Amino acid sequence: MRKPQDQQLIGESPAFLGILEHVSRVAPLNRPVLVIGERGTGKELIAARIHFLSGRWDFPFIKLNCAALTESLLETELFGHEAGSFTGAAKRRLGRFELANDGSLFLDELSSTSSAVQEKILRVIEYGEFERVGGSESIRTNVRIIGATNEDLPGLAESGKFRDDLLDRLAFDVITLPPLRERPGDIMTLAEHFAVKMAGELGQDVFNGFSEQAKDALMTYRWPGNVRELKNVVERAVYACQDQDQPIVDIVFDPFDSPWRPGLKETPEKAAPAALPTGPYDFKQCIQDEEIKRIKDAMERCRFNQKKTAEFLGMTYHQLRGYLRKYELTEIEE
Ligand SMILES: Nc1ncnc2c1ncn2[C@@H]1O[C@H](COP(=O)(O)OP(=O)(O)OP(=O)(O)O)[C@@H](O)[C@H]1O
Ligand SMILES: [Mg+2]
Image (tube, rainbow, N blue to C red; front, top):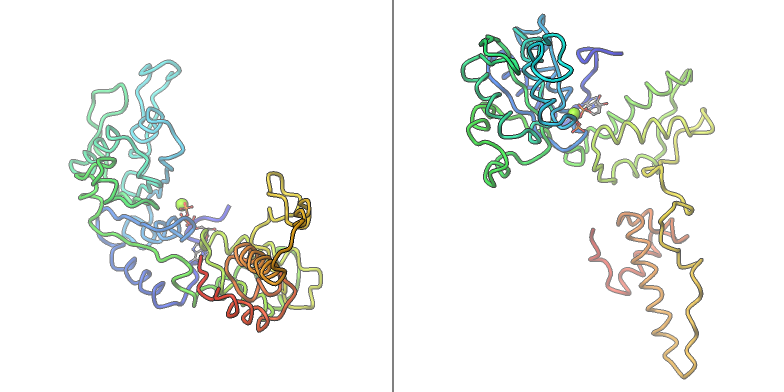
C-alpha cells in the first residue's frame, strides 16, 4: 500500500493553494489542529501533510477512526489497557497515544466520541499524561493531535454534544477544506490526473482526454462526495471506455442508475396509461399539463442540468429553453 506521504495532493485553484499555504504555516507548530470539510475533500491527506511537514515527520503518524468503535473499545484503542483489566485482556496493550509518542495522532470523525473519552483526550492535551484502562500509573506522552470531522463542531458544542473545553484546545488552528464545487478550477486537473493513472493501471499507453461533452458533465455536476467521488467517476469512465483511441464521452455519475433498479418508482411509460376522460375536455390544456409534468420530471432526473435534460428528452438545448420559457419554468432550481 502507498504511504500517505507518497500520495500527491493535486490542485491549483486559489482556494486550494491557500490551504496548502495554511498547512505549511501550521505544520511546524507543536499545537493541535482541526481539519474540517465535507466527505471526500481530502482531510486525511491534509492531516498526513501536516505531520510530514512537521518536526515530527520521522516519528509515527498514527490514525484512528473514532466512529468505527464502541465507546469502551475506543477507550482501550486510544489509551491501551493493563493485563486483566477486562475479560479477554490477557496481556498489556499499548494504546495509540503511546504508539504515537513523539509523533502525531490523527483522530478521524472526532465528533462521534463520548464526553468521557473527550475528557480524557483533553487531559492528554493539557498535561501530556493518561492512565491505561485498568491501570493507575500515569503514562507520559508527547503527541500532537490532528483531528478531523465533517460535522459542525461549534454547533455540536452549543447543543451540548461536544465538550467546549476540548473544542477550545483543539481549535488552536482550524483548516476548513472547500468542497470541490467551490473550486471548479481543480475539477479537470484532478480528473486528468486520476484518468492518466487509471489508464496506466489498465496498461493503456496513452490517455486521449475527455470530449467537450464529458468535460461539461464533469464541470456542471455538484460533487457531493467531492474528490473521492470524482476519482471513482473518472476511473469508471476510463475503464468503461470502449475505444482507447477516442476521448472519453460517457460519464456515469450513478453506477446504480438502471431502469431495473429495485425499489425504483414505475416510469410513466411503463405505468398503466391514464384513463381517457369520457366527457368533453380541454385538449390543449391537457397536452400542456402533460408537457410540463414530463419536463419537470426530466429536469429532476438530470439534476437540473439543462443540457442533459434536453438530451434525455431527445430535443436540442434551444428547444428545451423554448419550452422552459413558454411554461415559465426557467426558475426551476434544485
Ligand atoms: N487534492 C487532492 N489530490 C489528490 N487526491 C486527493 C485530493 N483530495 C482528496 N484526494 C483523494 O480523494 C480521496 C478522499 O480523500 P480523503 O480520504 O483524504 O478525504 P476525507 O476528507 O478524509 O474523506 P472522509 O470525510 O470521507 O473521511 C482519497 O482517495 C484521496 O487520495
Ligand atoms: Mg477521512
